[in-house]
Length: 462
Ligand code: SAH
Image 1 (cartoon, rainbow, N blue to C red):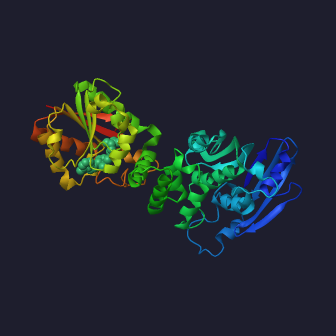
Image 2 (cartoon, helix red, strand yellow):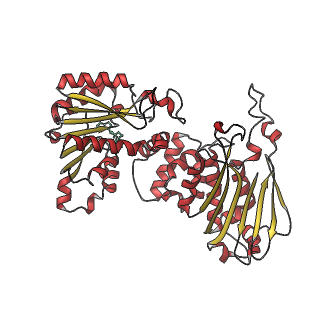
Image 3 (cartoon, rainbow, N blue to C red):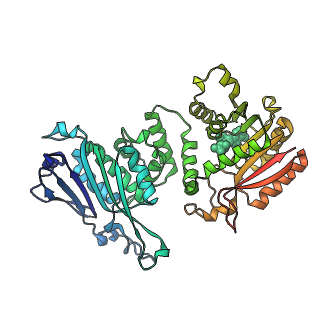
């Protein structure tokens, strides 16, 4: 597998000083899984390219392993693609440069210089979009070319490999750190067992860029081989670095759910559908029950038909995030009258919630233990007793359509249940009967002829 790094500013051969590798010869080092070589196919004053070639020994990879029934350990893409093996080779060959030091050209090591990077075969679990989402926020111009899995059978779709070129004016240490972290993230595999020290590596190599990266959750989760406890800890430290304090656990789980659903930006469609349903009821004073981090609230405040908006959640951390998102502390008296956040549990009657036109329970009921659901029903439909109630919840039947969701798993680890359309309809009808509401059901998201839409919505009116 290959990685090329090109400096395009004269005198470009200074790249040799920056990498501590003279362009005049081949630099070979041996690693447990095979030798790596650094050499320069071009070294002129205008352009100088260093190649890192990693010659993985496929037999070495399986040596010492007990043979199993699968051929996968013997026949796989590892020798040919950029992966965590390449990260190890980057650290091994370019460790000093990645730490920002240059014996002869420290001033250049400290400067942003025009670099081009070529990764001929980069596995991207997430396609072109993920390559862009990871590198573009760091200032790179990204070119990424995909390939059909088999040109003879276009219907098989794209192969998971891309040829990627990146260019940016950047410090070499940052460039190497980005590659070191993000190549295994795109590949979404690690060749070694990932344990706690890996958090240290991630924080060290992510210093200065990862805490503010929009894809920091995905990056941490994948870098830490999807081990929830490690990811949680890394995210806590990352957000501590950014001097924020959202509930990292909720953030991470939200990110997981978002990743499962991202193909169709379901979250946005859900918010759109709920706002539309509220408008259709003519409601002016509305409750967002289980408002979480306030995504729906921030849409509701934009619409001035809503004269009073109240967000309620049991999680103080979520409410803090919501308050930041809504810039609550910058509001004037009048705006504050219009938008309020209350902490409260929806399974208890709460006099503050009585007398509103409409209440929303968006993706909330499935977070409540089934045994506590009747308490929530009484608190909302009987005690608060709004004129309309809008409830959304996942349609469990649709889960088979989410490629990244393992069979039988819920979309979010805090979900206590996920209902089929029939189960939701049965519940809604019973609640409507008991408390005197009519019910209408509406799908949210692309409707599948067999399994329906990904999200289901019930609109109750009395
Ligand atoms: N409605 C938001 C958040 C959904 S996540 C959205 O769609 O983006 C579920 C939210 O319900 C979480 O913020 C959780 O804190 C809240 N929640 C769960 N059980 C609750 C309860 N019994 N009382 C109040 N809030 C609850």
